[in-house]
Each structure stands twice: as structure tokens, then as C-alpha cells.
Image (cartoon, helix red, strand yellow):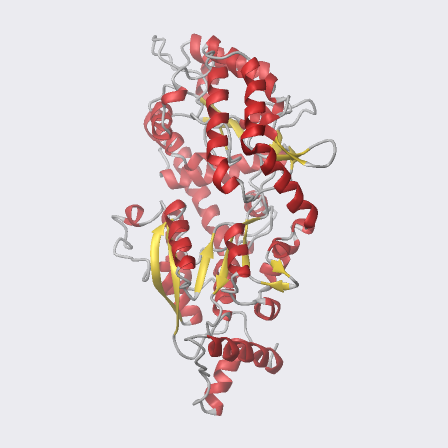
Length: 568
């Protein structure tokens, strides 16, 4: 980098500026002295270069559940989406400031705002988008900047090596169109496998061992229902908690039971690769029948929560929090769910994550997630496209290695409003969660010094220390410390020691017909599986469902997906 890099970036910025404002050309360096230009050159040549003057950028701000409400009662309760620990940090390090074109709750509300901005051809300078189809639309509409030079010249080492860690599944490949890098992808970490979470104190009360197979789980559930595990003398406990959609969105779906299906060779709600090497929808495959029959048998025996079809997720959380249920399936971060934190705090619940049920190979059959989880794009014509790359650098590397007081607010906010970075886009190795846990374990076992931890790892380590100190003193740890310790030191360690057998879906996106037909096809699927499980329909209805699904658009969608895959 140096002069050549700056020349490339400056030329790109000037060219971009000339495209903005209905064709008006504006060179932001035109009236600068040589000294001032040198200062901009230094900033533009450095992945963390601080701009000599404040650079503002418009953006869409994705609000999260970990937002204003969680900051109440903290020193940060008056923070706003334009003035908070994260925006202040970026201003201090880079001298950039967000001005929000729109703010919306992350998810459907935010995506709708993005769609409206695109339809009006008035997108913010820098914007996070969540799905690939939107990226394709922006590229085809020529609305976003080519970031090839920006990425090649300014991406920090952590970003580049993290992308490379995904091998053939490198997220950069996803954002490359005709050889041009058109976005900065947020990495989707490998979420590992889901676990069976059980009340360990109940298992101890009943003298039960950790289950492994489907039959083992059935015996534990039966004991939880029939043998008074909480010792209150009443038959008031229920079986396995199940969300009313049963499966899907693996592995981000608390209380879903995908693991039971995958143990029997069924992969619902994802696109698998069939014996001919083609994409096929997992929910319509013959393997589904054995899994549905098992679920129907368990429901008839009372091993599943009898009211699962009518419970909302909040209802399930309340069921577990109240101490009525001691078994569910969920990801490694389940200890952050109120179901666990509440039962730990009020019911003295001890939870353990178990690698079960295993498939024929003695491992959980898990589903890989895609390597990207969204994208940062830059409006075509914005004069400072490098700002986007620098913010991603700070999110992904800089703040984690910052040991100054400047980063203090960030570390304090991480446990209460972790995802409130503007342009939340971290780039990390696929197995980053395991890497951090192994680093922290090394400090605990004395093979590494605490000084080897980066700022994020240090925060997790200190949280674990506080949890262990509280437990040793016979006290309840703070819920945040409990959640961090159980997730990072217990659950993640389990899938380091007991890795799953992963299947990678053949397709993750949305085909053209899916945009109009998928909702009705999903409804048809849900109605069918629920009726079979609760005994309102026999297994022959599954074959009827497959026929109806195929004729109602499923075959067209399958053909579209295979055509798209063949053209890649």
C-alpha cells in the first residue's frame, strides 16, 4: 500500500463522487493543501487509518433484541443508535460517524426498510443486507460499488485469513460477480451441533446416566415424567419440550427437534444432495417416515409435551423456567435463553448438554450452516467506500486487540447489547468459537498466560472466573456470567471433544418461485407433520403430502434450484 494504494483508492473515490448527485462531479481533495492530501493519503493507506476530518456516512441501523431495554439501569441507558459505545469507539478510532437513514428491528422489519430504499433507488451510503437475493438485485441494478480494490488493499489480516479458513466455501466467492468483489460478507460461524439439554439435578435425583441413543432418551424422558424428578410428590412434570414448528432453521431454533430426525437419516427443511448429485428437498424424502412415526409414538406415550402444538416460544420458556420441564434440544448458546437463566436463578436448576441422539456412526448427525450471514454494501457514488472496510476491520480485529481504556465501553456493552455495532459485520474463522474456548482453557490449565487472550477472550475468561468464584462461595452467579460460562466453557467444549457428523446442504438461497410459493408449501408441510405426530392422520398422509407439494410448485422450485446450481 503507500502511494500506489492511495492513488487507487483516491481515484475510485473521485470517480464515485462524480457519479453521485445526478452526474455532478465533486473531488473532495480539490481545495486541499499538499499537507492535507498527505494526511488523507496516510489514512487511506492504513486499514485502521484515522481520517483527518470527520467522515459521515448514512446507513440503515438494525436494532436488536439486545437494545435499549437491556441498557436500562446501566450507565448506557441514554445511548442511542447514533451515539453509543460502538459509534463512539468508531469515531475515536477512525473519525467516522453514522447518520441513520432508517432504523428498524433486525429481521423482517429491517429487511422491509431495505426493500423500500432499493425500490426508491435511494439506499444509504453503506448498508447491511441480510440475504443473497438482495445482493444480486443490487448488483444487477448497478446500485453498489465495486469493492475489489478496497478489499485487496485495506482488508486486515484477520479478515483475509478468516475468509480463507472456509476453503472452497470462502464467503468472498459468494460476493464475486464477473471477477469483481461487490460486498463485504459477514461470516456465519459454524454453529456446531445442537445438543440435548437435560436437568442434571433431576438425573442425579433419579440415578440416571446421560443418554446417547434414541432409546436412551426415551427412558430418561419416561423417568422425568413418571418418577417425580423434582421430589415434590406431584405428577406435574412434562416430557420433551418441542416448539410448535417441530423443526427448521437449524441450529438457531431453540426447542426444535431436528436432531431426532437427523439421527434417523432425515434432513427436514433443508436441501440435500440426492444419489444422483442433484438438489432435493429433505422434507419429502422417504427417511422422514421413520422419524415421524417415532415422534407420533412418543407423543402417544406422553414423552413429548402434550400441548406443544399450541404453545408459543414464550410459553415454552415459561414451562421450563417454572421447573415443569427438564429436557429440550438447543444450540451451544442455550444458556443465554431465559429458560435456562431463570430456572438456574429461581429453581437451582443444573443443566447439562448431552451429545444425543447419535446416529449409526455413534455421532450426532448435524447440519452445516452457510459460510456467510449477510453483507455490507456501499452505494455507488459514495466518496468514501473504504469506510465500510475499515469498520469491518475494527469489528473483526482491532477492538479485540485493543488494551487501552478506549475499548472499555465496548467490553462492558458486549454482555448486554453485543450486536449493536452499526453495520454489524464481524469476520471470523469458521471455528472461532472453539478457538476462543481453547485459548481460555489454556489459561485455566496453566499452559498459557492471561496476557495471551485478546480483549473479547479476556471478557469471557473474567466472566468464567466470576462464575466459578460464586459457585465456590455457595452463591448464585450473575446470569450473564452463568450464561457465558455454561455456553463457552461447557457446551462448546463438548463439541470440541465430541464432534458431530455434518451434512452440508446443497442450496441455501431463495429461488424465483420460492418467493411466491414457499409460504403455502411450508404451511402444507407443517399441517401434515403436526397431524401425523398428534395422531390425527396416519402415515399414508405423508405420501399424499409429497404429491401435493410436488404439484403445487415444489417440482418447479426443485428444477429452478438445480438449474441455478448447474450454472455456478
